[in-house]
Length: 612
Image (cartoon, rainbow, N blue to C red; front, side, top):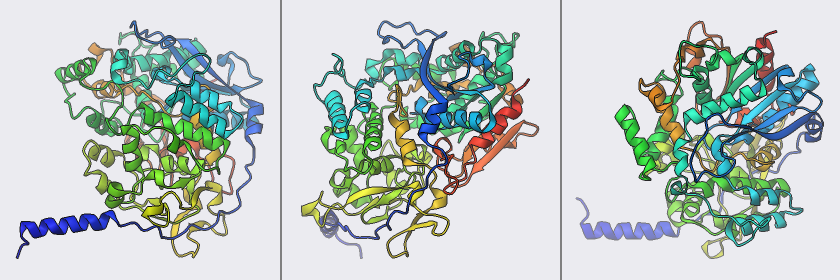
């Protein structure tokens, strides 16, 4: 017999009241950190050999818009080279142009770029260069406050600068922060698409090695994640749009191609990486059709008119403000990793930040609805970075890396957030496409009871080299019965990752990613593409270029498609246990912790394909 409606309503009210009071701060407590591993060489050793500069060259694809900020018609990139090598890049033994993934800036290659140049010089007596490109939209970021904070003598002073500049009235060098830009503030962003980005890649190569006969022998092009799509576009691109002239085809300008957890394949292939980014485009653009000329034109019209956003901006969840936050947290973690974080408590909570904190720091449906939420827990600066990016805590796999684990208080399993996320509008497709593993964890103890939240233990971070060792590889609770992770699955040093989030004149996160790029990807394999400047006229040329892909075993499952094409000069290296960002950050100089499969194999590939 079914209950009457009044009885059912009463039961639901009772259940709701019960759940609202349900809070359990207990659970298994992680074991003590183990002694760290001394690296074979230090950052000071690398600094003595490697020079890093942030350079620019004039763009050949010029955006003519009166509101475009000054400097946005320059192409910027990080240049890594040996200090004693020639300033003429054409004299180097080899060079690599690397393009970052979605929501990622040039500092995505800050660690691996320095290490590759150092290892080539010290271990092989070769002078190589790495050029890590910033997409042009990075010129829109106001990093004045971050860079001032980076130079601050103390973490407290750095925090005051960040909060004061971005959320208060503090002026730096006479300039005040004008606020985070919205899509309507950036009408010119409609032109920040694949034609502009691809021709920016050409601009760097032609400026650094002007002679195409030389670049064809020693320059390699590649990227991480979406950077593989940029590479595929470049290799098939016809710069002058005339198929009868071949010297300007991207594939004829380089010696090889490199991919990090991505695929490099003809963009007309529906099984290639283009399909990986289609769900993201569908989420942002609300399933607007783009599979015909009319659909493509309609999307551009809606973006131009402000009906659709021009950059990644999900209302009440994900915004430029949210994307900027990791740089601040990483900067503070570099200065004082074990000090209790205050910045999350000090900054005003916009609707986007409130929603973001609640969604990404939740144990189950009851916790999402009733808390305690992120602000009720005590975390160190390093732990805050871990919550944002570690593969055991961040639920979006394209943000994940393997940096270690929480330490210092009860840590419990999350409920499967894939199912939970699918119930939330705007997120169900995004979560399904980019979610991390279900086996994830969260801090449990925000205080002894709901009346005393914020009085729990200070959660710190066990770094990757403090998780385990050869004799005791598992990271467990204090009883040894509950396993969290093990030394094989943790390979990124926290100090290397936090450095990349903030160091220098650029950063790791991209505040204003242009959605025109995703729309142009979907148009690249279509017959109407060239009419809109998408000059990927030679898709088959990709298959002639020697290519190496490093596929993260626990990443986005990319790169396997390219290996299935017979006769292609293609090498696939699968990296077991690695998350999406790990190929860029896995330690190269701590072999007792982790044997790196990227750096040496990449250098082997490059020098095997450099032509005399």
